[in-house]
Every structure is written in structure tokens, then in C-alpha cells.
Image (cartoon, rainbow, N blue to C red; front, side):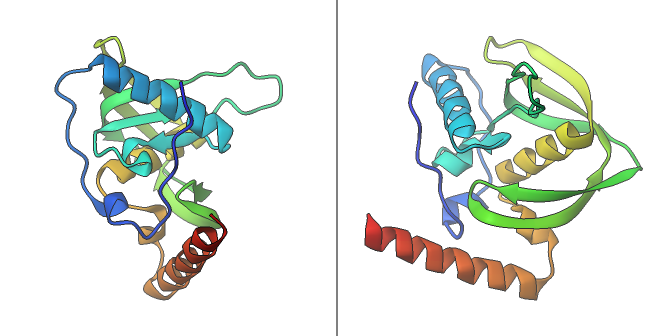
Length: 174
């Protein structure tokens, strides 16, 4: 398992719709493991394959972050929301591809998600609270949507300019 570099916005791969996974190969299972290691190292609670430059429908997440909580990692191939509640939640979201930037986003409070696990088994479960927000955020990545796309155009432009500056600074020090 290895830590993979995380793409920083703006990068065209982050705005590209990811391809469905037809066959869960050893390579894709290793990718899921690498993504979990990368997510924990960042540290974050979710990561989508496009964020590490792989345009496949794969997300990983683990929202069990309370002190003393046991890790509860998920790797989901081809995840899809099959039901969303009418009730909404507002969470302050961030993104590993948009470092040190946070904004409130409104999303359904509960969702039912269907996916394929790394063993190839079909799964379906109901998620609420932070888990629901995180899953929706990561599935958005598979559609080429970032959380800043839910913000107004002026705020989105300011964030994009700040990320361009960050990328230039990182390139100079690399």
C-alpha cells in the first residue's frame, strides 16, 4: 500500500465524469487500499478515485472519527444514491483537493446507497448525518462536481484563484 498524490483544484480530471467499474481487478483492489491509506494520511474522511487521478467510479470513506472509535472504512465501487430524504442537513464541508477551504453545503439528511464492495458483492445501506454528507460529497466527485459548485459564482472564483496560487507556490518549492 502506498500514499498517492492528491490532485488540487483546478485540475480538469476533477471535473470529469468517472467511468463505471465493470470488473474489480487486483489493480482496483490495490487502488482502494492505497486510497484508504492516502485518506487517513491526509487526514480526511473520504476520497474519490478522480482525486488521485484515476477516472473510475470508486470512493473510500471512514467517518468514525470520535476519539477511541474503531475505524469503519468503506470502499465502494459504482456507488449510487437510490433514495434521499426530503429532510436536509447543513454541514461545513471541506475537500482534500481544495485544502484549508470550508463552506456550508445543504444536502439530504439521509440516503440509501447501493454499491459493489471490493469482493464483488452488492451492498445497500442507509446513511445519515456526517456519513450521508460524506458519501454524497464523494459520489459528486465521480460526476465531476466539487462542493464549491454549490456556492455562488463569486465565492467559487475566489476559492479557485486561491487554489491556483497554492499550486504555483507548491510547484516553486518542489
